[in-house]
Image (cartoon, rainbow, N blue to C red; front, side, top):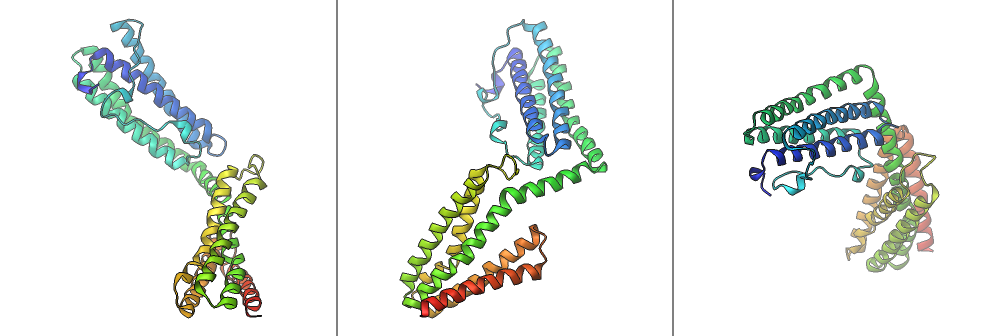
Length: 317
């Protein structure tokens, strides 16, 4: 149905349903974030309580005006409404993303109440809807005040450190392990095939097989090594996916140059790519693992050089 066709009872019913859905989303956010992000969970609990208060006032007015039966009118039943994403799909949402969605939801609620108030001809309904529009606008300042207080207490700083640690555990560690394995372990079979055959097409096939095979192997190994319940390292299939993809990417990086028919040019580009890959690995170790940059570079380059020499020795023999 069109928004302009809604009468006062339908406007109130729609507002009641919207407040129920928003409050449920905020409480779901609070539940999921409470363990690692208590300050943000407190903010969403406060917002959920506000939505509950709005719902009670809407229901009270509806009962006075139209009786006890409230028809189910949802946002998806009205053209032009933005329906917020279901909270059960956002289990892994980060605190800042949850706050962004909450800000969008509050803005949409304010716009709805302003439009509904203009459309209503009943004085009591129009007054309540107008009051709720102003309260939704004040929610933004209330949230900012809570954020400022939490920042002053150091709570948000603690949450940022926790978020960084979880990001490292869930994505950086498995990704780095895969990138190192793909970039280093595939050097030996790739360059052994290159020096043994001198044929770029055959070398590409060997590199492709090694990269894809290593990606599948590392993905399963990472997923099956830890269910994440005790270590807090996150969902096994997600870690396995990240690790497997980064392994394949690490191997394919220096394999793709061998699509070039010119052997010397392909070999030169592949070596340059290897240097870039090892530099990226060193940077990630320095950036996220607190490893001194020179130490990280030395360890990675020495390891890569040894694997390359092994492939060269085997291929040339």
